[in-house]
Image (cartoon, rainbow, N blue to C red; front, top):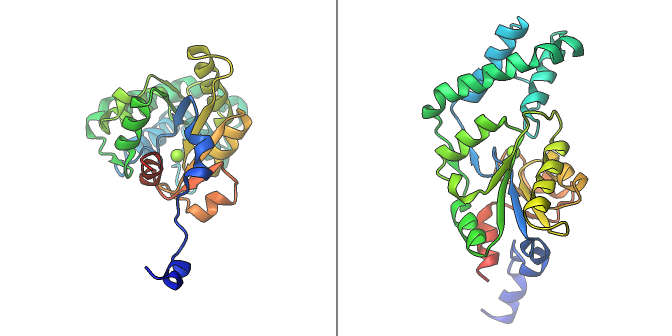
Length: 245
Ligand SMILES: [Mg+2]
């Protein structure tokens, strides 16, 4: 390459210097949907809709709710508020509704067909062999989240998971996940979340952790960058590339 060609070369999307604070973390906590995998089956969607119909008598769906980045509880609450279900009724019937979601997903889990996001198994294998603690931090209910991770063939990488069975807000799930890292490693352990939505970035900040945003969900890299994650990549393939540098 001549000097002038070199000057015209586009800057690499990945930079080890920029990423290295994140890649020195003691623990990595992965969001599921849009980060580890994407699902196209309607198993989770149908379970949430049946819970609203059978428990609240609400003839509605989660369509139109901005559910990316929301917890299952948050999705149900937003969809039911829209059809006039009060906070009191929502809370009183919630345990029965969550039982339906867990039951239906459990019954249909064999049909989960997740598409694993680019280079995710390679990234997890590299982090695992580097001795990092790996966990899942997701807005899914626990049964739902583990079924997805299991059907994607990724379960064996993770030591633990924190889910939204008791939390409406992602901030609370991520805070709980950081506490679990501290309990398993030490109080000063450094934590890096990996997620695909602005909600992941906000929740990681709230928990005092680092965050890498990946554009493998519905948000483009430019959208995610405007929320100022510590690092942002098009996919986990770029992280694998950096680690290998
Ligand atoms: Mg996600």
